[in-house]
Length: 408
Image: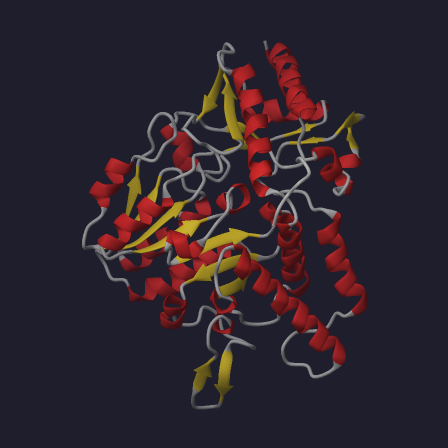
């Protein structure tokens, strides 16, 4: 698709109703999109339109509403598949990226034995740590953590050294939700496959801030959530190579995932339905499909450049500020700025900023090992999205200066 018009952030903002509101009498400046992005009219209208005119349960009905809903639901799967260059049969709907990781850990993990190794990293979200810990606790699997360098890069030399014939799975993030670090996924995959290991990539941030081609990346599993991609909550995606999915046992039991059920024997459906027990998140899947279709109508390269320019605009003004530390400054990092202020708790920073209408995240960001790596208990985080403006970036810096004076 060719894009002749320049990136128009103001035109985009008109498509997000929530951005028109105020907070404490101030215009809302929403800098928390890494936690959950806001939703454009295209997504809200698609979900409400289906609920108003065609809603029914999917797959098993023969009446008109069931057929219309099933068509919309499966069309969304096709949209997701095309978005990451996969086949629809390689896309499993889950309720979240967290559930997608748990699905792989619980099914693939059944083949593991004590002493088998899983490689993860210090920068992982808890969703890509805790499910693997279950295997450590229950089956004696060994977890190995790739260290993070001072600038926030993954220590690739250490990663190479951790791989061995005992490595069965490498589970790493594409882009850190705290540091913004973008990892070298092709090299990560190449080295893991050379060692005989499979690879799961957490793409929750990566799929938002980069174009993803799972075939080119050669990943075995790729997971992401809808709500960070301008879609609704309650829907996530597990991509897996067809041969990997076919080898996995069912994750949950119930309707839809079966071939047949008798009192003596059960047979299971082919993927992806084998892993989709029960009534799915129908409206949410359609909403995610609408979010991706909406994104496909925009110049994503221009979006990435816009987001990065906002990050640099803010980072440039904050570098060197006395007592303020930015966590992670890796080359090519994404538009995520996590920071601490000496002597001030991140929760206090966020609460004061909120008084000026600025919404940022504060806490450990579900990344406690990474917090310990950098010697902090928490941090504040501003994350930039396609709907943020230069004026908002400057207003954030101004509000932060006022917050620092408040605490001094």
